[in-house]
Amino acid sequence: MSKNLAEGEEAEEPVKRKYEPKKLHTTEVASLFDLKSEYLKKKNDIVQSTTGEVYRGGKSSVLAVNKEEKVSIKKEAQERKRRINEHEAALRKEEEERLELVRKKLKEKSELYDKLAEGKVTLQTSDGLDVEFLVDFNAKVKERQEDQLSKSTSHDDVQPTTSASIEPTPLVEHYMPDEERRVYGPSHMKFSSDEEKRQEQIKSLYKMSAETEKMRAKNKSEADEKARAKREKLNALRRRKGLPEIRTPSPEPEPELPEVNLEEIPMPIEKPLR
Image 1 (cartoon, rainbow, N blue to C red):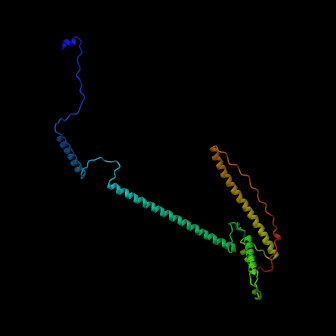
Image 2 (image 1 turned 45 degrees about the vertical axis):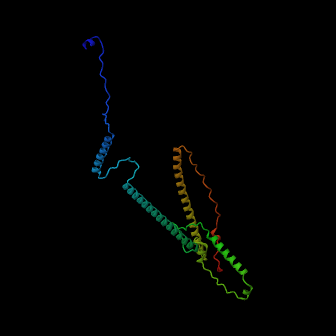
Image 3 (image 1 turned 180 degrees about the vertical axis):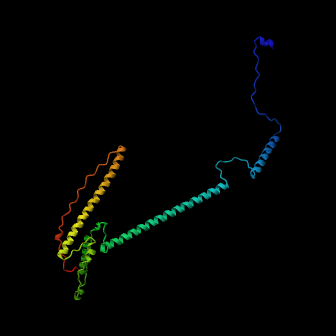
């Protein structure tokens, strides 16, 4: 060997074998089945000793649901349904209470309107001024009188000829000054027949009118100030977002009211009203 190394011959390296599992060589197939059955039996014994249940081999599914999970899912569904029913009952009760409150407010407003139309109630502000109404009571009185007149004329037209022989009963007429407010509305003011008291009442009416105009101007200025502040805030936000500003609206011209001379108001009539 030394001679061969001296001559420069290369020594052969030993061949490395790859690791392979040991192979079981047998000529009997039955022995393999016996070994597999023995393995499964040992495995079943181990699982039964740990869980107390018989192990059943097979493919397990991820979506499989056992009995306990089914019971819990059913309980959750029942609980969810119960909560939904409770919420629906609470919402239904709240809606019924809201409708009952609205119905009660409408009934109170209707009763108050009837009392105002009959003159039984007068509303005043904190400053002692009468509240302005959007309902024209004078127009309503005229309509009521026209309806009564039309009904009376139609009744006279359809009366039979035999009624001419019947003597009409005398109509009792009397003047009730307190009924004017009931007929013409709560804003109606009754003047005295005495000249001095009449002038004092006219002066008081002038004073109340001036106070009303002053209060209107004050309310209008406060409303304009609030609108201006709101418009400035919106314009600041619009400038920040690069949007055009909102233009200031031009002031609306005040309507020209006809001048009324209270001294031209006629004296109370002496003839009783029908």
